[in-house]
Length: 199
Image (cartoon, rainbow, N blue to C red; front, side, top):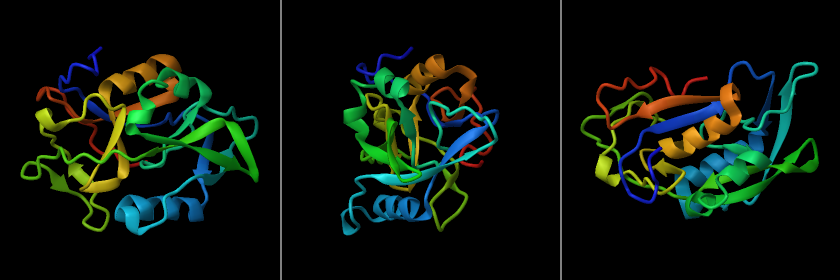
């Protein structure tokens, strides 16, 4: 595992619940819109201090530790927060999650405040101009904020990118319940996921 304190370039991932999970947490349209507006416009929009959500689940579906598949709205269970407890404050703030009208003590949304311009714009390609989603993401290795567990980029601010060491730590904890999609690697032999931001 790359030591995040040494500044060596690491792989970057998108994290989401495994497709095998029978329950996912969906933010309400109002909460998702407020978060996205702040991510897009920064201080020109109110700073989100909490979100509302509801379960989308099959009968008897278990409640996963990493339940949200929204690219810009990672929700962490207690074990995930503990695994990254020392590093999370460097990336952003944990916000309360209200589920079905009640605050859920076991879950917190990680509002990622860190925005780092580390994209190699000349080698990256855009999929959707309206959102900034990149079809092919190429990062400048020396600019990747390796000490952070997660960060956002100004080109696509509504998506959270996870450094490889944090993704591996959560994957080791959660196993197949967590899907990790490779967005970028400093190793040119490593092929990124063909659609890392898709569902």
